[in-house]
Length: 154
Image 1 (cartoon, rainbow, N blue to C red):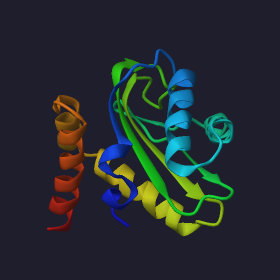
Image 2 (image 1 turned 30 degrees about the vertical axis):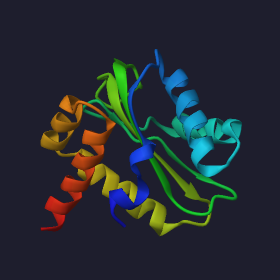
Image 3 (image 1 turned 120 degrees about the horizontal axis):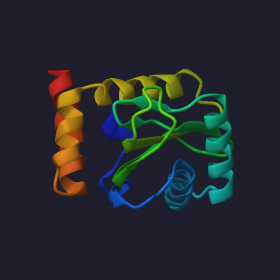
C-alpha cells in the first residue's frame, strides 16, 4: 500500500492554525469526520486514547496520530502542515509542524501496521520533509507525496 493510496489532494491541509496538541487533534477529528462519515467525537476520543498509550510525535517535527475505528470501511490518511509548530510531547521534545493522521478499521490488522510503516518511512526522509516545509501550497505538497513514492519505487 502506497502513501498516495491513503491520501487524496483534498485530504491535504496547509496552514492549519492549532495552538496545542489537543486543538490539533480536535481539528483533525473534525476534518476526518467529513471524510469518513464517523462521528467527530468518536475520532477524537480514539486519538486521545492512543496518545495516552504514548505520544505519536515521532520526532523531527513530525507526528503520526493513528487509531482503529469501528465501522470504518478502509484506511484513510489526512496530512496537515501546521501554520506554527506546536508542542506534541514528541519523543525528541521538538515541536511538531507536520501531521499525518491515519485511520483504519478495527479489523485492519497487518494492513494498519503496513500503512503506518509506509508513512513513517516516507516522512523519515529529511529531504522530503524539507521540501514539504517549503512547498507553497497543498497542491505542491500532494505532488511531493506523488514524487516521493515514485522515487522510492524506482
